[in-house]
Each structure stands twice: as C-alpha cells, then as structure tokens.
Length: 232
Image 1 (cartoon, rainbow, N blue to C red):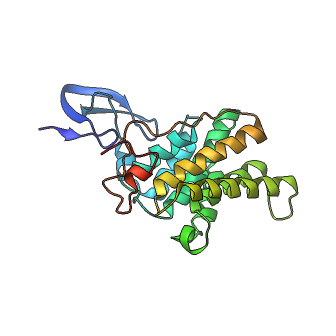
Image 2 (cartoon, one colour):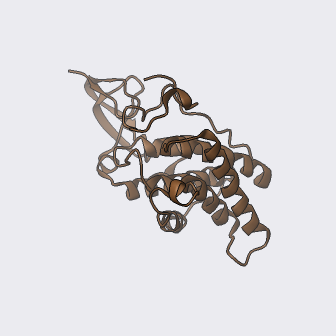
C-alpha cells in the first residue's frame, strides 16, 4: 500500500532495507525504510514537534538564503494551520534567517525567541481589523532585529518601518480574501527587495514549486485570482 509523502505528496514506497537519510526540517541524520522518490525524511523529533518548536528548529538550522524556501519548509509541517498567527512568526524568522545565512552570520536561539515573542502578539485577523498584515509586520520585525533598531533609532527604525510598509502594500495589491501562505510569500518577496537595497545581497526569492500545497485546505482560496495557484 502506498502513502503520500507529507512533504511533496508523491507516493512513498517500502524499501528492502532502511536507508540513511537527512531530516527535511532540521538536517539531522536518521534511517527509514519508507520514502518517496525524492527521499524526503522527517525525524521523529520533528514529526512530533509543535509549531513553536518547529519555528525554532528551522530558524536555527535552515541553510537556505531564499526566505520563501525557509517559510515553505515551515508551512508544510502538519503542526501549522492553514490560517493563523503562526504565519506572522514564520515571515519574521524566514526573513531574518535568510539574510543571516547570506551574510554568513550565526543565529542564536535568543534571536528566534525574540522574533516569535514580538510577532505572536499581532492579533489574528490583523490584516482585516487593523489594516496590517501580520506577515508584513513580521518582515519589519526581521529588519528591526537585523539592524538592532528600537524606537529611539534613527535610520534603522525608518528602514524597519519602510520594510513593513512595502510588504504590507504588496500584500494589499494581491487582493483578498485572506490567504496566509500567499501573504507570507508576497511579504518575503518585497522584504528581499529591501534586503538587496540595504545589505546589498540578492536572496533570489523563488515562488513555491509546482502547485500550491494549501489550496485544498484553504476555505477562502482565491484560486485563479492568485498568482501562486497552478491548479489542484
């Protein structure tokens, strides 16, 4: 009997003997006798982790410099709902980690904790009730952390606010109703533009591969009105 891979959706097949694999989420080595053609593997710790634990794991171990790939890695994990404030944290951590990776700088656990503590305070539905997308605010939080900004800062504060504003406008132009995944992708695209201007690094954000992974779960999906929709 075949089972779909929780990462790519392709059939998983029983192997004659366990294969040595690397966890898709945290990079830890392990073994499995059930895998898809791409040999995706989830270690037991990541399989059982909750959303907060996964944000911390990926925020510390992701090697990518593309923030969309980092965010996508989190959003496909079963601990994350298709809608929710978790996406505010995802955008912040993905942006922060991508820039840090591109600059060859280390990320500490306290960095991730600070970002999640700040962004999880943004209320659910802030895009509609406050006019501020949580993913856009997450991008601003990332720039604030990267630049060491606070409310008494000069240029750093302005850059963080501009990053939020530009990401928010980009999400607004995508139209509604809500889609947390599309908002994260869009906010990170614009955040990457800001990173190029501020840090002179090209993160080369890439749209999610193949089809949107969330269309069957998202009750408000815009389908053909969404540029990330490539069929079901």
